[in-house]
Image 1 (cartoon, helix red, strand yellow):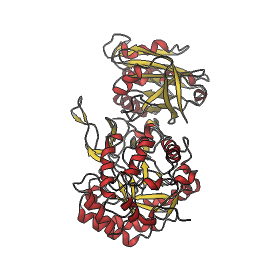
Image 2 (cartoon, rainbow over the protein chains, first blue to last red):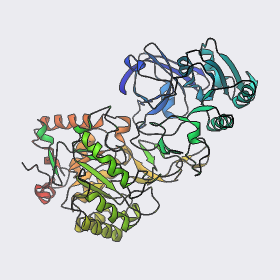
Image 3 (cartoon, rainbow over the protein chains, first blue to last red):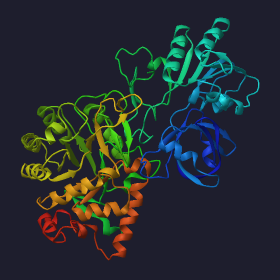
Image 4 (spheres, rainbow over the protein chains, first blue to last red):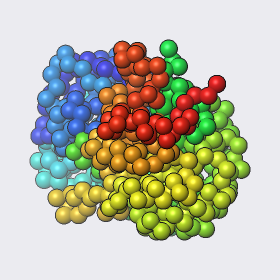
Amino acid sequence: MFLKDVKIIENTQVADNYYLMKVEGNKIAEYSKPGQFFMLQCKDHSRILRRPISLHNVDDNILEFYYEALGKGTKEFTKLSIGETINIQGPLGNGYDTNIKNKNIVVIGGGMGMAPIKYLIKNLKDNNKITFIGGGRNAEAIKIIEKFNFKNIKIEIATDDGSIGIKGNTVDLLKKIIKNQSIDIIYTCGPHPMMLAVAKIAQENNIRCQISLEERMACGIKACVGCSILTKNGMKKVCYDGPVFESTDILDLNVIDPNGGCK
Amino acid sequence: MNDRLNINFLGNKLNNPIMTASGCFGYGLEYKDYFNPNELGAAVLKGITMEPRNGNFGTRIAETPSGMLNSVGLENPGIEEFKKIISSIKKELHIPLVANINGKILEEYIEIAKEVEQIKEIEMVELNISCPNVKDGGMAFGANPKMARLVTREVRKVLTKPIIVKLSPNVTNIVEIAKIVEEEGADGIALINTLLGIAIDIKKRKPILGNIMGGLSGPAVKPVALRMIYQVSQVVSIPILGMGGISSTEDAIEFFMAGASAISLGTGMFSNPILPVEIKKGLEKYCIDNKIENISEIIGAAHPDGGTAYRNRLGGNYEVKN
């Protein structure tokens, strides 16, 4: 894991509150896997915690972060200019299992959950057939897809307001696909209710499903135990054991834990 | 030149007075990708209880201005699992290790103290009577002078290892509690645990933390920690392990001058994982620049008498005996 000041080479607004930051990752890039994340440090040290930001893409030695400016820390990130540095820690967490060959795959990203999707799909090669389902509130929430530049994969879009793609959600699209095809594995990242619905469908149809969870965390390296969730295998740290989990480890827990996986 | 930071802390020779705060450093090896943990003076490991605990439900972390709230609630694998992992930790960590022990009721404190007494890899024990995040036990002991007396007395009976009693700042009179635990045989005092607080999500109209309340740490609590260490060190004769928002060498020096013999780093490491190494270098430079032979010379330097009386009371307690 690296702890380094890296140079910002791009930091632009994609849409609404959604931004894309590119930094010179150099050696860090080759160690970074899809689904992993970095802890980005705020310059204003009154904000004492780093922000966990998912790895969006790796392009040669460039690391890309797609982030939403929601609070003071991420809003601060939007003001950083080209040439400035930002201190990053990572890559952290486990990432998706991309060692998949000759499979029929569905990848589902919802809203901010689009963050790890680009690099994930880039890494799913080896004769896999991939369908990508992207969804969000409106066209703005899924504008990032325009930058994906995927080749040879099927893209399906759903928005809540129908401004682009079908009016509906990603789960509706998934149901339709499952009716007509046999799916081997589903990858998903997005709002908890969406992932919960996806995971349930996967379970009903006996499909392996990897979900990427999000929790508030302080250290990112399982030292503070702030992001622990209850799973079927006991308490697990989202920062270290995750953020990617097999949906079956999270679904249908006997104990009701509001912190446990899909909320 | 490293001698300048050598200290004797409760009979243990430490390479430097920099330790970790329990609950912020896992079980000692989590930070090893960022620095060699053997560079620390000692490591205080995450709090343990007799039985495994899942901790609190819901969101556990909330950032606040210059600080953060946590309501982890002592999630830990329990003493049996701790006993299994401690030898492998000790293989990599050659510095003194401090076990932080917790209980819900007096009997549990005694029981876990007996267990820890038998663990050879543990040099010192931090008796946590100040966790704000468990409903019973924890702070209930630290906030009540009678309970603080009772738990320290009973644990002392079963522990020969040095005991550091970690006190809660959520009390009216910290000096009274500090004197009580000293009377009952505490070898040292850890000041401060977190301050009880709340943060509210205005969109949801609800507290952010699942446990509603949590413990405040970080630079926001530093003045409170310094004040309590300053007050307590003027009346007790045992060393103080100072903590609360230390984020720089200058902060660390303030803690020594207030009366701390050693310091613990916690929240400051979340933003800056290499903080211990930075402070170690910073303290070495500070000592050289100011012609200080040993860092312990400045313990209590901010007291009205320059700390002479307190250092005399500590006697050889902080000096390195060769």
